[in-house]
Amino acid sequence: MSNELPIDEYAVLGDGRTAALVSRRGSVDWLCLPRFDSRACFAALLGDADNGRWVLTVPDAERVTRCYLDDSFVLETTYEGPDGTAVVQESMPLGDGRADLVRRITCTRGQVEVLHEWVVRFGYGQYRPWVQRVTDPDGRPAIHAIAGPDSLVLHGDRLPNAVHNRHEDRFTLRSGESVTLTLTWSPSWQPVARIGDVAEGLAASARVWRSWAARADVPGPYRQAVVRSLLVLRLLTHAETGGIVAAVTTSLPETFGGGRNWDYRFTWLRDAALTLEALLEHGYLHETEHWRSWLLRAVAGDAADMQIMYRLDGARELSERTLDHLPGYAGSRPVRVGNAASGQVQHDVLGEVMCALEMARAAGIEETPTSWALQQNLIDHLVKTWREPDAGIWESRGRPRAFTHSRAMTWAALDRAVKAVETLGVPGDVDRWRAERDAAHADVLANGWSDTIGSFVQYPGATHTDASLLQMFQVDFLPPTDPRMLATLDAIRKELEVSPGLLLRYRSDKTDDGVGGRENPFLACSFWLADALARADRADEARAVLDVLVGLTNDVGLLAEQYDPEHRRMAGNTPQALSHLALVRAVHQYELAQRRRTP
Image (cartoon, rainbow, N blue to C red):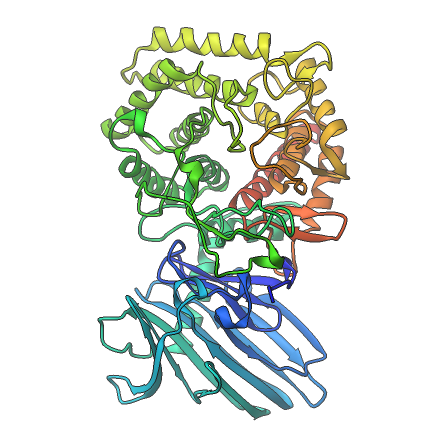
């Protein structure tokens, strides 16, 4: 039987290298170790308990509430039962060079009955490990699970017993009593891991997250949502390599029971560049330099070989395959790992990258000869190729087209390159770049506009829009109050807004994307709507949209990729970087619009 727990029931824990999803009732149902894109050892999210999970809960609790401690990713869950109350604090400690997950349950009133269940399945829930009780190098008892290259060690004040291919423990806690459990991953050829300093790990993690969040000056009514979103973006950034994953999960469905299930545990150049813009608007410069170094390593080589996405370490191999042993979330199959879209041509990607790097320069991050040489090389290649059809921002698996959004972002890439030469004096074939920039702009105006519907359209000859056209506001393709931009804004709302504030990416009945089926409203596009309204000085409309969208975050402030307004539930992979960065940027534009109209 497949998992059907609502996606918004999950909170995320992370240590800057990987992340876990834990349900409101205390079940860790997804964890890949040691990296975001590693094989999962708990995969109940895409199957059931026998695919691996780690439960620590009060089964008879009548009320369960949870929150992150201040601006951190230390999760605190309170279970109120008929005879008492218990609190669980859990975190993945930062900066200790280990892959640990720490959980501590404390009875704060009366007494509670606790369930502890530990089911390890390596290889995305497929392989039962060899499990034995051991003694660690410090003489402490532990449970060691090992299979192939992976091993997990469970330490605790009390350890569960083997029961029918899993480990289980049921016990009573009385007021003031607590039990602490620590899970540690290590390569199978290394000695059994020691237990770390649990109390200091929890406290230090909270301090690090709070200190990072405190650097952001966020005014206005949406501060809490913005700070949490910034924290999510930081959590999704690999601390060592600088790669930024699009989401923690794979194959959470865009359509429940359907086949629109994709692996998002990789670094898309587009999403990462937009993440940097969100961080830069709030003063985070170190992260930008870290990612630029990642970019130089990942893209190094022939510009013709640039991919739209890479693994966290910059590796290019993302072959897509299906995991047929997993039933999929809510029966949504196939379950995919890898992503075949990595081989697509998407001309818009360099536009987002160049816009982010221009913003970095404006923030004071200086170009190096190597960083500019890379950009020069990529722009020279774009000049030769931008007129060819591509797969577009939505990674269509249908036939390539001359997407209007791709042409507009080509203009943005060339425009930022020309400005760099003009303002910094860096080398480049600026006369040719300037001519191609103007040609791309003219192409969009001539072929991306439809007199039939009075709007920019998805591609030449189309009579329908696309929510990606809202990004034309973000890159200043035309002034935001230009009649053509306002007409496009209104046309997109008329065609794609299926619930107040919620936009589809495009109409699937009018677009052959090579996948088929319907999907739910896309949250990033919905935030782009608020962003565009703010830039067009329609601040009241922008706020109305923001109020709807921010209200969709779950109880700990997280957003998935999409939202199903009919059943009031999230859809798609979670937590989604694109959703959270679009929230941050839309609120920023709303605050700027407020300042413009209130001297």
